[in-house]
Image 1 (cartoon, rainbow, N blue to C red):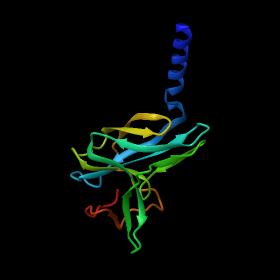
Image 2: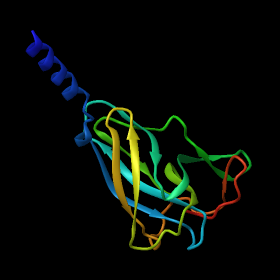
Image 3: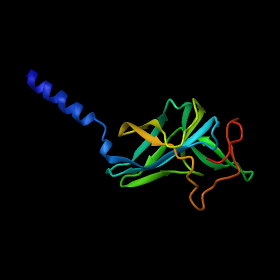
Length: 166
């Protein structure tokens, strides 16, 4: 009897382990607009090889006082505005979701130090199904925006000071 309970408990624990193999991170990089900036951002492609959608719920890092998931929206006055996306981003089954300049991204607010070219920042991505995933994201201050990307005229929302392009 005790052995059966023990085996059932072990099986339940096995099923509760996050499926990291389904989520992969590609082409990740972090940057700030200038050396002494108080804000920065991280970009990446998140792929899901699993059979079910997952959701990136939140991000954390000690590189900044606040780390949030953000996107750009039109404020109705011809300006794009960055806003927090509290519900996170869906990572579709068998697909991917790009965190990129001018779109969805990880936002670092109140940087605790400068982002230095060639170094890396540690970020914890929290997924609904895959759980926590710790990634080392290289700092690349020299990467240029992708062609056709939005890179100017953006304002940070909710009372934040205007912010230069990521």
